[in-house]
Structures are given as structure tokens and as C-alpha cells.
Length: 365
Image 1: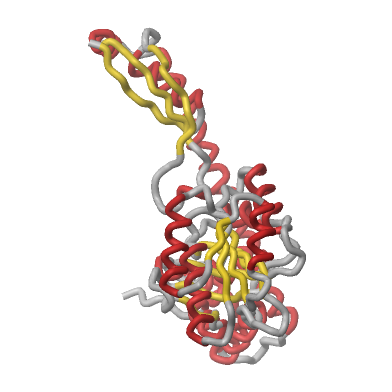
Image 2: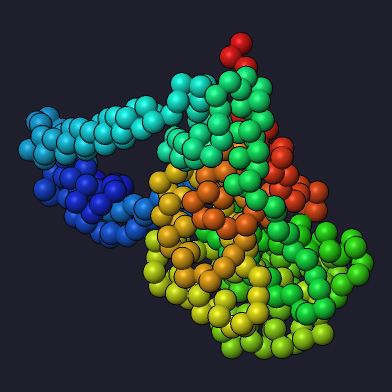
């Protein structure tokens, strides 16, 4: 009896090896396609390859009676990948250990505390080295050094820059990868201005790839009693902005983009280039992995200037990534989101509070 089975791998070669190991050479490949991994961090991961194959059940029973020749090849590949991963990890750890020697003993305790609170090791070393070079720590007690460190952290974090409305019209773009919370964050910010009852506001969405995103913003626009325009292309965007020429603030929701897809990033660039005068907010998940963070930031280098909104801090284990993101982008912080509730779960970033959290000792009990 003919049956259907699917195989998933990081590459076509890997998926095909799995197929041939289990089904043998007689299986018929029906289709090959790329798919996304499941989970909250799926937009940060490379797409997988899924191969669908048809096979006779009796052939499968025969093939399982012997060790398939591809088993050894796949096993060798997995061993090589594991060895390579260990080499990279050991090399990184070795480099960090070497660099740690650059920190004076008096600051080693604070290095450990910051790293435990999520600050990247290299960033922590750079910060402490700079502090030692600029401040004479000789003869100072622990509490004094801690106060100096907090001052250094606050200085790097900078003064938060939320949206401020002046006499000119504000056109505000919300950009970032899929799943980071752009639509919900836009609704929270818009709601905060609606509650002030001082401004005329318009909403635009160019996230027409997901019907759910349009419907979500439409729901928010109905609740907030704000007009909504849908822009399917650059011409629509220009018309929508023109239609809102009497508004004080225009909030624009953009489509989530895979930061590794150059074509999608270029499309986003064209959307943003619709108007010369604008405020751009790049949204980044507080849980983002360090390596993914560096890749994401490099892909958004086409933006002339932007401010940062850190999302989903309620799902993060610590505040370290707020500092990491600010440090490597050198862009101004603005808002922090702490949940899904509109309009409550958003606040202007309190850098003093974050600095305290970064040097807060963990309770090991």
C-alpha cells in the first residue's frame, strides 16, 4: 500500500539523507519546499526544507532490515557539526577569559553581576575598562564603585526619546521583524495620545501580507475611533499620507520582514522613503539572541536614523539585552512594552531603573 511521509532538514541534502536512510532509493519525491520553524523565535531562524515522499509500505519494512549506506554519512556530518560548534564555543570562551584579565580585580565582581543580568561579556569588559581609565578607583569602597558604575550605565543608556508633538506634522513608522509586536505597540502609543485628547490622529497599515494584521489594526481603529487607511504599495502610501494632511500625527504599521531577505528589506526601504520627514522606531524583542541581534542590526543599516522600542520585556529573564541593544546600535531608547494589554502595557524607558537592575545581585537561595 502506497503511503506518504514528510522529512525536514536544514538543507535539501540533509532532508534527502533522512528520506533515503528510512525509505531507501525506491521512494518517490512528490514535492520540496521551504518552511518556517515553529515557536516565538521562528522569525530569527533560517527556513527549513521539507520533502514529501511516497513509498510502498512493504519496501519500507525491507529497507529497515539493513543499515542504510547513508546512515554513516549523516552520522559523520552530525559529528563534524558538533565538533565545529564545540570549537567555536571553546574559542569564544578562551577569548573572553583572556579579555577578563584586562579588568582590575576590584571590578571583577561587577563584571560577573552584569553578565548574570544579561549584559554581553565583551560589552561588560569594554564598559569596565573605560570606567577604570576615566576614574581613579584607588581607595574607593565597594558602594562608591557601584555608584560610579551605575552612573556609567545610565550615561550609556542615555535619555529616552519618546514621541513629542510640535507644530509640524509627525509621521511615525513602526518597523521590525515579524512577531515583534509592531501592531500592538502602535495601538498602545496611539491610545496614549488619544487619551490626551489634544491631537488629530490617523492610522495607516502597509502590512497587507497578513489579513490578521489588517483586521487587528482595524479593530483598534474602531475602538479608538481613528481613521484607518490601507496601503498596498508606495502609491497607496503617498495617497494615504496626503489624505491625512490635516492630522497632527500619522502612525504607520509596516509589514514584518525577514531581516535576511534582501528583497523584503528593499521593499520596506521604498515604503519608508515615501516621505522625507518622519520618525522611525525599530522594535526589537528583549529576548533576542546576541548573534541574531548583530545580524538584525546590520540589515537595518539602510535606515538613516531611528529610535528603539524594546518589546516583550515581560517574557525576558533580565534587562541585559536593553543595554546590549542600546550599546551596539548607539540609537536612542524610547519605549518598553511589558505585555499585550492596550493601552496599559507600555512605558517610557526608565534608564535609572534599568541601571539598578543591571548591577542587582542575584538571589542564589
